[in-house]
Every structure is written in C-alpha cells, then in structure tokens.
Image 1 (cartoon, rainbow, N blue to C red):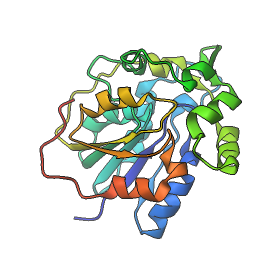
Image 2: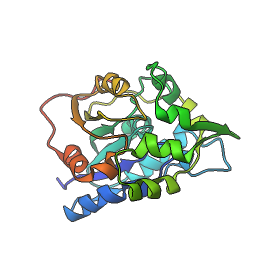
Image 3: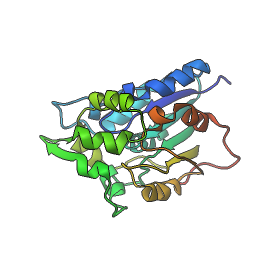
Image 4: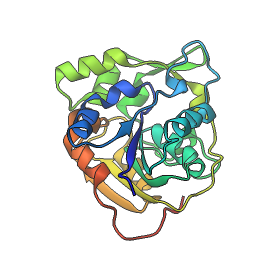
Length: 238
C-alpha cells in the first residue's frame, strides 16, 4: 500500500495559507499533502456557504487512489467529521484543537458545551451573515505563542467566516477509523477543558504545549504527532 496523503483542513477564518510552516516540514520529509480552501472562509459575498459545501471541498481534495489522513483544525474538526463517511480511502483522522460534533450537533452547539469564554469569543463581530475578527484580539487569541512576524503575517491573511457554517448540523454517521486528538494546552481560542471533552470522543489523545495554531508555533512537533504510528485499537465512537 502506498504511503498516505495528508489532507489538511483549516479552521474558521483561515485558508490553505495557514499550513505554510507545517507543509515545509512535510515536504522535507517527503510526505504528500493537499490543503483545500473551505468555501465558508472564502465566500465574503455568499453567506450561504455552509458545512455541506466545506465537506464537498474536502471530499474532492481527498479523491485519490491511495489512503489519506484527514487533519482537522478547530472548526475543521467539524468538517472532517462530516466528510469522513464519504471517503473509502480514509486511513485515519487527526483532530488539532478541534471541535468534534456528535450527530445532530453544529459547531455552535459544541462550543456551548463549555461556559468558559475565550479571547477569541471577545474578538468576534457579526457583519452581514458573516463573522469577522478584530485583528488585535485575533492575534492574541490565535497566535500568542508565535513570533511577532508570524503573528502579523497570519493576522493579515484572516478572512470572514459564514454564520451558516457554524450553525450547520452534522448529518454524517460514525465511521470505523482510528482517530487521534492533539490537545493544545496553552490555547486562548478553544478552551483546553472543552478540548479534553472533545478528545474523549476519539481513540487517542496527545498534547502539545502550544497555543491554538501549532502549525505555525510548533510545526515540526505537530508533524510528528500527525504522522506517528497509531496505537492498536478499533475505530472511533463518534
């Protein structure tokens, strides 16, 4: 069997650009990857871009002959969970500081499982069916442990996010595939306690002393956690 291709699914307000430092590590190590842009983060004039359209973008990117590993960051965890049953070549799912919805839940529903407000919550504002982020607050919430240059670069690339994507409910059934959760212990965007609850819906939990964006603050360590051999066990139960 050929080595798996890593399918990198970004979170809200982001795009394929955010994986820049991580894919440099993957390229160095000869690991194949793809990183689609999600419509919900790239449709500033279309507030109807929702979870279904994001799922379709991931399914298209993963339409390969060989096995794939789905990696979902933050809201991207909802997307990979929704996309997983459509992939016959799925080898593994890796969640990074991600939301992992149960059937019928939306990203908003999952976020409300934690009463703890974060710096990210304080940075949001609603504009015409989209959510925008205050740049200064977003920098602190998403990239506080990155270098100032990386933080400035990342903030300059942030987009809007459709409300529809957050309110779309998971329709996908569970799949029998191994899953790993990468818990970011110094996260100011998704409360680590909420991450711990999400992680219990997966097969394996590993942690990293990182803020919300380890693909920029700890890319080599994150690559190792994504590619490590899975432990012996069955599929996930969500």
